[in-house]
Structures are given as structure tokens and as C-alpha cells.
Image 1 (cartoon, rainbow, N blue to C red):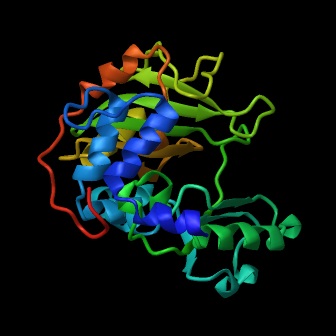
Image 2 (cartoon, rainbow, N blue to C red; image 1 turned 90 degrees about the vertical axis):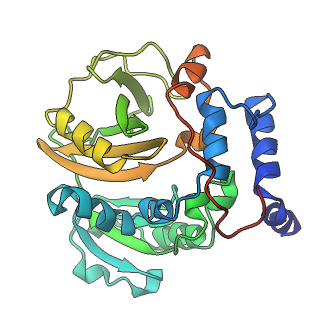
Length: 291
């Protein structure tokens, strides 16, 4: 309890520098950030656009994005609730997905409601609802997101899986895509990286890349078009998509992949991608303690 209270009163700048040293094993240079990970830390502290809170809220992001690209690319929502007890499961279909709107871990996938472990789901969701995700890595947009529960349509393609296409946008331009596959396989998640022309890039992040060649999604050009429309005037942001039975769906918006604490292999790519981020003028502080 005391440790949690202390962590919350530590100024953001001090905590970000502490975490960077602990996880990355080196000092964080905020005066002249050069690498991708360093610049993400700078953006956490100094690029505090009020839109970002809405953009990371898994409920409000749908409304925000639909205003830009229309409703046809939005995953259907079955309901939004403040508490688990408010959910009427009899009204939900046999398959659905529960998510917390304010974090990155409150996810429950229900493929068969007759086998649904409601007690375990309740424990997981309620535990996540109590947490302010901001304090994990000082990702500012999450600080003021209202914790809620959202139920969405369950989706899978003909293979029984659902690939996740994460498009990295630098100053409104798509540069590369992280493709997440084999999420539920015995070997675990694979993350394979392709450039804008769908050529495999020769670097890795924490997860291994797939040994199989991954076909470019049918809707890839539309993904890029939408990602660039959403990311306009933003120094860096990742826009996620799904392609289910040849139909494109918007997933979510992420400003700091891995919290800005994921190493590159080879390390030179950290600086190479860092050069693509043009840092904005510092935006005024909004809420919270000092920088």
C-alpha cells in the first residue's frame, strides 16, 4: 500500500527516468533524445494533447475514429457498463469479447457462453477496473480515462485466428507494420515487421518473428489510408486493425508501444526509427504532478 502511494506522488519525469534506467539499463536523455524509445518517453512528458485521452479510451476511440472514417470499419459494440454486476449476460450472444476501456490488460474472450467462467472473468475485470493504467509507465493519455467495461463482437477468420495489423505512423505517414500472429498457438505470439511496401524488415522487438511469410492483407492500402488520416499532426502513433473474412476493422490506438521500454534487435533500429519522429513544441501541462 505504502509503495503504491509513494509511486503515485513521484513526479512523472523522475519516474520515467527511473523506469528507463531499470528496464533499458541506460540513462534517459530527455534534453536531446535520439532513439525511438527515448522519444516516446519525451512524448509522454511533453506532448499532452487532450485528444489523446479520448483516443486511447476503447469506447470513446470508436466514436472519435468513426467521425474520421465512418462506422463501417468499427467493431460492433454490444454494451458499455460501469460495473460487472450491470452486465446482463442473457442479452449477449454466444460469442463476445469483454474489455476494460482504460487499460491494456482487462480482456476476456468468450468463444462459448455455455462454458463461460463468469467468476474468473469478474475477478479479472474488477481487478483491472481498480487500477489506473497511467501509473504503470506514466503513459499520460490513460490517466483520466474513466474505467468501464465494453462488450464487442467476437471475430475470427477462416483459420480460427485473427491477425492483428499494427501500423506505425510517424508525423502522419505510415512507415511499417507489426503483424501479430499465432497468438493462441503452443509456440506463442509472433510479431513480424514489414515496411510500407510489404517487404520484411530485418529487425525484431521482444517477440520472435514468424518463420512463415505472411501475405499482405487484402485491405492493406485502406489500412494505411485510414491510419494516416487518424495520425495526422501526431508525432508518433500506432493504429491497429483486424481483417476478418476480407473485411477491415479498426482496432485501437497506441501512443507508446511497450511503454517505450522494448529493445530492438539489432539495436541500430532504435535510433533509425527515432530519426523519423519529429518532436513537437512542448504542450502545456494538463493535470497531474510536475514533469
